[in-house]
Image (cartoon, rainbow, N blue to C red; front, side, top):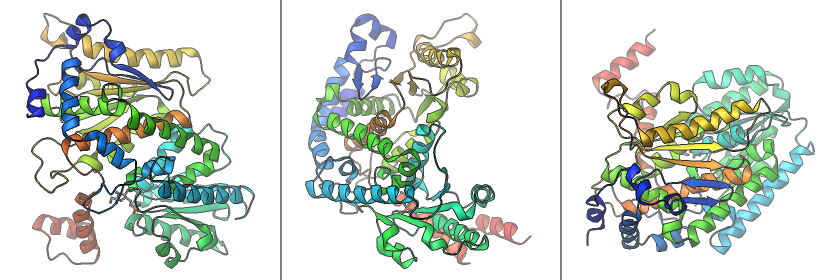
Length: 497
Ligand code: F6P
């Protein structure tokens, strides 16, 4: 039986008809978990489609794959290893969970030592890292800071000096802690920035810059080689993927800045979502249902993108974080067995914040020719103390947009016609705190995994990023033999002035 064929040939109802036909729809497709309400009712998912997707999931052994993910089985075949980010939250192979806990205790001890002044007076933290070694910590800091933190923390990723220089101008080198976050401890951007920061410290007269460096890495030997004392290296397991690493010591700068309790709440929220993912039947399993919807829009409705709009400034970095998580995981053309993938892989994930995006890109969502499933996020508890109108306006705008996308509006004037029937999901958080954010991020991780299993791809490698790195290294080494004429001209034009 071709389960994809059954899904693709399922008769399609409009959202309006689905609501009319089933007044219980919001009950069937609305779920609460860890302080978050997930509303899938404004998607085209219905009982028949759900049944077909459940058959596909059974065929793809999704239950066994979830079990394998959360019990330390080597489910990353191209690199021959497990993907143990859940062990960081206490769910996984016993030895891995114990090891993660030991490393967490070490991290906590270092946080406490720094707070107690073991590294002198620290007011500033420069966290250097890129990709998964930056996006997670940055998201946590931006989402959970309340404004009275003891440290000013800057996360710098780009090799472009425009990112680092203003920080060096602002910070006092004598009171700065340098945190180098790199799973491989080799990434070019991170180490050029690290050299510039240590040079700056020396120029500013810091007597022992290396005494103020913390390394977060799965390659502690390389950090030792780089000159960092073992007591200031916080290792994590190689089986934790870079884009799944914020739960490990990669979260150190966020834990130090926000407080270890907040970081522990984050792990608790994620563990709750892990348990939900492991134990809940698919028709109520939130990450699995989200993946069913993703696959429906991607494969059946040919949607090439999915948009995420956070109606909360504190979550403004969420789309950036999700872009790496989903596109680096599932942007593949081959399946786990090496055979070509004969359907769409990850959609292009993009987004922004509400209400700003309404006045910029929502035109296309309401009337454009591309169908774009939209994900709305909002938080019931405001993150500020200004007049209630601000938050009311924010939330009601969010709800109005999903209602308008679905309802549409007919007009004799084609310019003013809204086709409607445009799908969205809404994630409504009771509050934005460690627990809800942990559960939210874990939800996205598991949704990405469930999508990969349905497609048969390995979400845990990222060979696609290597060729560009190789060619950049060749250019940096002055070797342009392999380059095309266009690249040659660009290079000559840039460096002959
Ligand atoms: O080049 C891609 C990548 O390997 C990501 O997967 C990773 O998150 C990022 O680079 C940073 O790598 P590292 O933590 O090893 O410096």
